Image 1 (cartoon, rainbow, N blue to C red):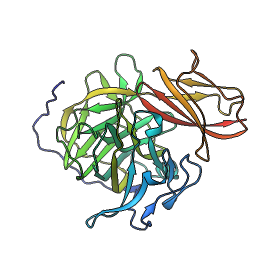
Image 2 (cartoon, rainbow, N blue to C red):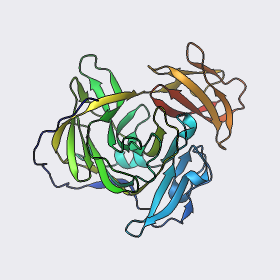
Image 3 (tube, rainbow, N blue to C red):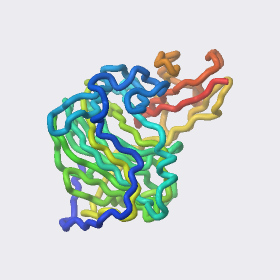
Image 4 (cartoon, rainbow, N blue to C red):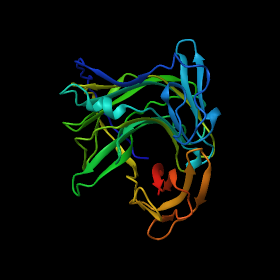
Length: 338
């Protein structure tokens, strides 16, 4: 495997001025036990959290230890299919970000992460997305025991953009049942992404790519996706997360990251739809499934047509979720059947 070299330097820090909280939670006001009872974004559970994938035991408020009190525990599925994806979302992020103070153009995320069972080959963590693509995120690889980044990057030669998984941002392994404080920042004006893992901050730098500028987040996701070859569930937790809008960033050691694999910008159209949904993606679609808002799987297919169309003519009018599995992971898209 390619080695990564980090320049030895003292991290440079700056005080965050006029920081505004966009979204946060420490889960202390929640009841221990199930977070919710709907697993298709249909109705919120405790704290207004919407859930997608799995069932009640996969989303729990637990007391991991006395130091952290209550935390949000989630358990990924035992395979590498869309059924193993877990996602938790609150509403209101877009409005809070749009109402930030002028000049607070840096998105800053910090959270405590518990590695838990650290089994299988999954990637639990958090990210911020908008309606078109992901922007920035940080995940834990339960197989390698390393943190990996996520970043929206622009190819300097083609100007094509994509949301990528980034390896090489830290060489420190965190074994099972370990708490670690981590975070990341995205400077939309200057095109800078940093990752902070265990108190060490690095600034992302990849040859041939630059950080995509001027992206505005609309959603903060707590998410776990299986990596290729996953064969076991993994249990992990987060606590004390804070997403802020700030106006200065923390620059650290420049790190030579490597793009691991593209996280597709997947889209569907038309929406609303009456007959066929077309999936737009650069990667091969491996499988699709349609889920209604009660969480029931309506249909599941291992293949789609050559032009990536899904027949929805037999569906009753209403709201549905289309889970799309490509070579680079699974994404969920809401659609309305007319």
